[in-house]
Amino acid sequence: MKIRSIAALCGSFLISVTAFDAHAVEVRTNPGIRVQSDDGIFSAYVGGRILMDGALYDNDDIGPGNVPGIQARQMRIEVGGSAYGWNFTTEMEFADNVPELMLGFVSTQIGQAEFRIGHILPYMTLDARNSSLQVTFTERALLTSMLWPIYRWGMAYTGFTDKTFYHASVYNLDNDDSKTTDGWGAITRMGFDPAYSDRSSLHFGGGFAVERYGYSNALDEETGEHEAQGVRLRLLPAGRIATDSRVTMIEINNGRRVDAYKFALETSGSRGRWSYQAEYGRGIYDDGIEEGELSGYYGYVSYFLTDDTRPYDHKLGRYVRVRPKGSHGAFEIAARYQHAHGEQGPSGAALTRDIDIDAVSGVINWYRNPFVRFTLDITHARTEDAVAQARLDATTTATFRVQLDY
Image (cartoon, rainbow, N blue to C red):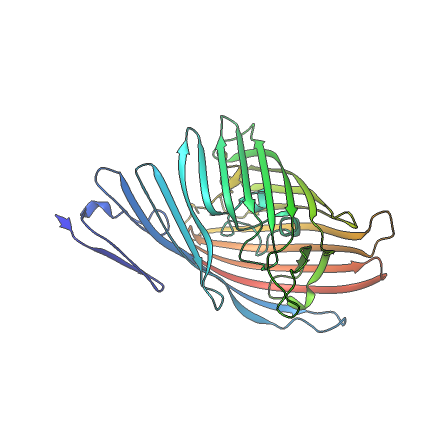
């Protein structure tokens, strides 16, 4: 029996695929709706995710306090497929007022490696390599925010051997998130897992990046001159909704090219219900007038109250979807400590900026099934300014998240 049209409505997205046999529609063992031709040459899928966050704060008495609220953190639609040995992936974000392209690339397999070109994610750290759906806490580590270039136009090559994985990418810094950004970057990441099994892993790896921030092609609306290109990095230690706790870690903008060098070391492991993850990284910035440095580290331990484990993909060097064994789902508890440091100043002179952030987090995760998750994350973050010899912020955040992967 032939099905002439298959339609699936996911949020506001409608996909129609024609002329497939009835058995081409797969049962939802994975998120999304999937179709495949009888000969296997063509396949397609549509899916997405929703992350809803609600946050409460215990603010300090320094400046304005963060306002409790509810935020649609992610509302994404993903469409992909394959044909004649090539794959395509497109992921759009609808949580903000204007739809935004997150991923948009084509890829193909070359032996045991994958080549991608388009709007991609260059991977600098393990925390970045783990999907936002699988990270243990509601926020990735501050170290990741400092070093990771996030979405960029570029090319990536990712592969593996028996116990090793590797990644290399080149990308353009002239992307959608800053009209004054110009330049290029390159990243390489590799590592190995000497003790991989279904319920255990031991992961070691590292990454290195070079970035060149040039002059912007954008014109200043008032002066008509080219805007000077620089580097500015700001962090949200108390969470994304806590905008009043935002702090600038580094800002270099002297109208000159900024050279940046970054590296990170990573380790993680799991054995049965237990797992751990820790990373250290550093970034150095120099434009010939000023020098800056970013550094940080974090570590956390996780334990499943149920007979579950944190699954590890040794081919990609990352953790993947938790699939609960029991009918009531999987319960996980975890604790994390992290530190972030940012400093800058004229070459050979005293520092003009010297910021330290310390944060401790505790989390409870309930994985109701592989596609539904509830999270309670409590984080206390403290920010100090050594130049001013003052505390800039101390906030405790309680975040509740509902996650649906469809």
